[in-house]
Length: 413
Image 1 (cartoon, rainbow, N blue to C red):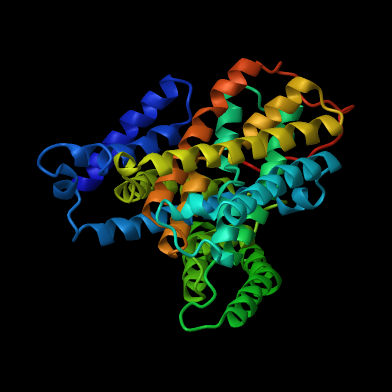
Image 2 (cartoon, rainbow, N blue to C red):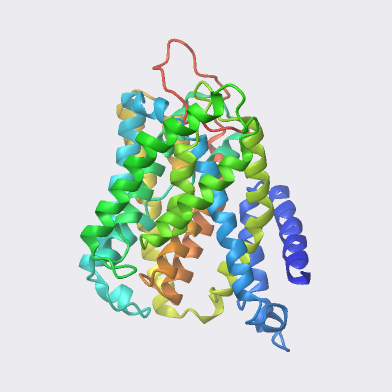
């Protein structure tokens, strides 16, 4: 219990410090994991990291961390308005396609053309489908929740650029998590790949065609026991997480699926459910960052890792900024709006860390590459707010004369 108290205290302090410097809270939370792990605390005399987090405690922290990310992914899925995404404008779809497919192609190309850059940091199966597809996803993710926080905190909410960026990030979220699920190793729990694919498709279709309508009917029927939807949301999230784990996928996919399946009222998430799930995720997420930090040792990376970090930063940053900017310009946005959209789409944050932990736990990537990719996520997220400050986008709200672009359904509370 003392471990949890220390984690929450340090996370609160560093999160508050991050906001003082114009950074999202997630930057301070990530640094909490770095500070309490072998990168900083572990380098001090007396093995303080080992004393604070002994081996017998780690399984309990890992379980709580997994509950945190499942809850967080439920919120991400619950906030996505699939109806709006289906009606997304040509601008949103073209920006999303460019900002997702270009970095995916660059990531996969880097592995196929320069495999030695990855073998030099200890990776072995660099020619496998799982590794190539995972790297493609890892450099192309945009963190929708962190992007929304940056939009709110920078005061540009409601502008045409922010609405397009949020909508495009919602489209990319669905596509990226689908691609990440496809990157999972071929056989899991003794099931061949084709059976896993069929069962996963059955789970998704059954959830959409049977579970979601049934839950909607149960909630709205007269005399329903579920006047409060929170217990149902928790059961759905944990049940879907268990189901995807049994299929050999990570539990986070189940959390995301549960959020998509959870019924909404007139297309709007129930605020009581949303706030409760956000609060639970916010309380437990620092544990996830510390568990991540215990697998991270920045001081152990060498010259080859630094060179690979430079390559991945070039791919991930250029792969977002250039296509995001060009796609926006081709759709009639001015230079400043286009640059703002590109800068926002370059945000990775917590979503990237969850994806990296999925790859690490599945054995697709290992320690040094994991550290390199975490540093990439930290750097790209930390540069988003300064870039927006430099751009100083005028706070012009989207007008009726602009092309109608639906939001991603993201609650900005």
